[in-house]
Image (cartoon, rainbow, N blue to C red; front, side, top):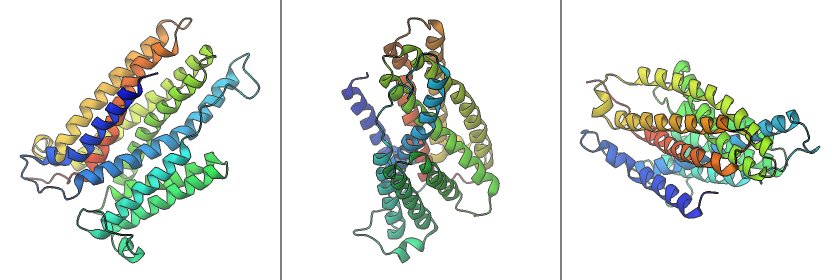
Length: 320
């Protein structure tokens, strides 16, 4: 397994990027500094990560069950599953969403001193959507506690819809833009969360190397189509939102997008390396051999989540 110190360092770097990214991106653009941009980005990164863990577990456990059933000589109940992280992720996501609702109610880019009144939250569109997201995470946690984790997919889908609506504050009726954002975010979440759960499951299946390799191969096939959909929807959304090519370097949103595109390219490269390792020698492939390239892929996907959160905080580029 990757050392805990390295994981901590990676998380620390991502937190630093979230807190300082908006100020760095707006520097020299002439755009007004985003009030509370760092805290907003960090909270939204936590919200995205919570979605990844929960939906990744829902999809990953089903994939693991299908893979184990397709292999000969597996136990009746399938190989051992990793412990659930969904409950903790749901509570983290609910906390982040409530904090975002509190910031929307305060209206000055800061967290409110105390719990705001519901009327203050409902007074703003962003506060209302954040509060709906908090309720979605609460329902997801309830499903886990009732030992019905797959039911959590429904309220979590509602969280994704709320995020897609929040990304288009100019008009509730922009169905195309909302749909593109919804598919884009869902693909990102399932790709990242699916990889997290696949690696955790492979670790639990260390005594079943054949099953572990089959699981990663099955995940890789699905990840390819998620990547295709992610690139397609991301390109379409960018063309709709970007007023000119010049905006890529003259706006905070454009600069952040360029960095995100570079990181997505790095993710694709890491994924290709991992798949080549997987196909190179199926008979003697160990978990450690697979973990090295996929660990870099996972770290880069974490950066993609933070940059996606940063894009939600950055002001939309304007023509001229």
